[in-house]
Picture 1 (cartoon, rainbow, N blue to C red):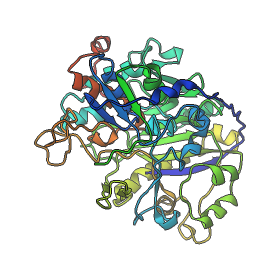
Picture 2: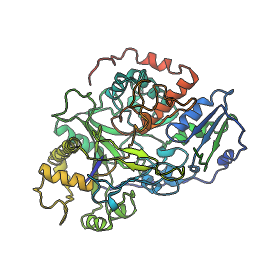
Picture 3: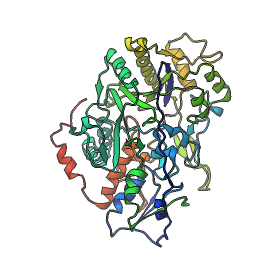
Picture 4: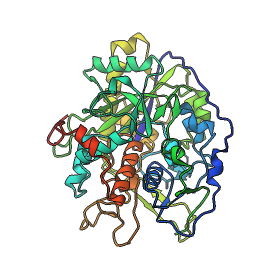
Length: 506
C-alpha cells in the first residue's frame, strides 16, 4: 500500500533521450522450435529470464523460454529510465484491474486499483521504476524460521553478490556488493535533491547508510538497475548476452494454455514504528520514497495510469505545480492479505484480484508513522530554506471535516488517496512439506505435481522489505542452482564468511 504526498519546492531537471536503431538481433528469435525440450520456462520476466540463461549454460540441456508479450529491443520507452510510466497500459503491460476495494482507493474509478505487470521480454523489470533493493536480513531469516530451509540471509546473500555489477566506486570493496555479474546496478543522484533529503533526514536523527549494505534502516540513496544511463531489465542483462546460444530458444507473443538516468526515484527512508509489536522481526515497517519529479499537469495527464476519477484529476490540477518533488509512503509488511482467483475456466480470462488493502487498522497506523516522519522533514531547516511545504490533498467534500494533521485527517487521506505500491507477492508461498498454507516446498516445487515449479515473487514466504525486482532475480538465480544441483556461489560464500550475519542486529 502506497500513499503519494507531493511537497512543493523549486527544482529543474534534464531529460536525456536514448534512441536505438532497428537491429537484426531479434531475428534470432525467429527460430524453428524443437518438438521437445529438457526445460520449458513460462514467462521471460525478472526470474524467468535468469533461469533460462543459467539452465542453458549447460550445452547438453535444451531450454525453451515462452513469453506472452513481444520483444523489448529498440523500445525507447523501456530503455529510457525516466519513461517508465509510458510503458504502463500498453501492449507491453497485462494491465490488470482489481475488484472494487472496500476500505481504500476512494478516488479511483469504481474504487478499483490498476495493476501493471510486464508482458514483454524482461517482464515487469521492463516497466518498473528500477529500484534495486535486496530487503533486510530479518526478511530471509524469518522465512527460514517458518520452514523455508536454506533461504536465510546467509544463504541468499551470495546470490545477490553473483547477480551484481555495481557501478558505484565507493562500493567496489564492500562485502555487500560485487562486480562482474550480469546486472548493472548504479547509485543514482541526478539532481541536487538527494543531498537535501539526506540533510533533512540527518536533522531529525535519521542517518545515511548503504541501501543494500549491512543496515537497511536510515536514509538511503537510490540504487538502480541501470548502467550507462540505460535500464538493465533481465532481458538486457540475462538474455541479450546469450541470445545466440543454440540450446536456448525464445518464443515471444506466445500464450500457453493450461531522461534523467533514473525513473526519478532518488532516495529512501526505511524506518520502524516506535510502538511496534516487539515479537515481530526487526525489519522496517515503512518506506519513504523520494521522487525528484513533479506531479504537474503533464504528469497527471500523461504519467502513470493510476485510474483516478475524472473529477479527482480536475481537483489535482487546481493545485499542481512544476516546482515539486514527491514523497511516497509504502507499507512494508501489511497485516491485510488478499487473493488472486480464476474468474472462469477460460485460460485467457484475466484473474480476479482483491488485494483487500487497509482491512485492518494496524496497516493504517503504519502509514501514519511514515506520515509523521514526512511532517518532521517538512519542519527541518533545509526544507524551510528551499520553501518546501506540503501540497494538501483535502478538498471540499474530501477529508475537509477532520482537523488538519490529526490522525483522523490522515486516515481519511490514506483511505481516499492510497493506492498499490506495485509489489504483489506470496500467492504461491513457500513452506515446509507439511505446511498447509504453502503451495511450493523450499525447492520451489509445486506440491503434488511432478516436474512443475514456480519461480517469481509469488513464492515469497512473506513480502520482502522494499521493492521486489532484486529478490525476484535472486530467486531465479538460486532456483537455477537447485535444479542443476550445483553450487555456483562458493566463492561468494567464502567472501562473506567473516561477516557476523547469524545473530547480528542492525
